[in-house]
Length: 287
Image (cartoon, rainbow, N blue to C red; front, top):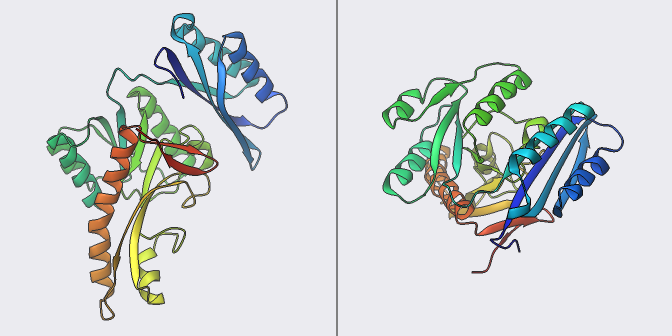
């Protein structure tokens, strides 16, 4: 457990795989008198990704100096190295990614307006302009990123996330697949809602699959996004029983209503710091 007198830093490293990266990054942390709390790395298609959490005595750490030092190390390695400091004294900045379905976004904005979630929403990102009017109505900044090439789209999105100092991301029925190159930069900080009780019925047509298979119980899952798509650590799940003669439209309507509340529950848990992830599983902290 990290004590309040300490600062927690999340360091992410992404770039072309090469030898010695882990050693150089961890050595830099040790020289800054940091203590490594968690570390993991992966390589997919020659792209290296690393996530490290380190704690420091507040009075011994210069955040700006540490940030600049990591940036210089990244240049020497020809990799992108970024650090995100936990700042408990301020509200978190949440970005919401959307496509065209409004129900999850409407619920999130309504919850914020009512004070159900204490969070800033400085950025909404859409793959099209369908929900721009909703964002404008609630006075949220809305940016459309329509590039068909996902790598180009993600570079633009990453620039926006840095510009608005985003702490975590919520996918509110965002219908694009994020690449490992993107996901690695926000480990356990991207929350998605999927229209099935995972691990059953992954993919984009979960309700149709459930209907075709005659599923008697259908639901939805809020989970952290990993490079394994719908296989990320599960945060919260809800379900409902399907009547024998329920048509697909009825199942979908019930499911969408449940998606909103399941995603909102996951956001609340994240903001309350009531969960943590280790060994690929979400654990609820004891008060």
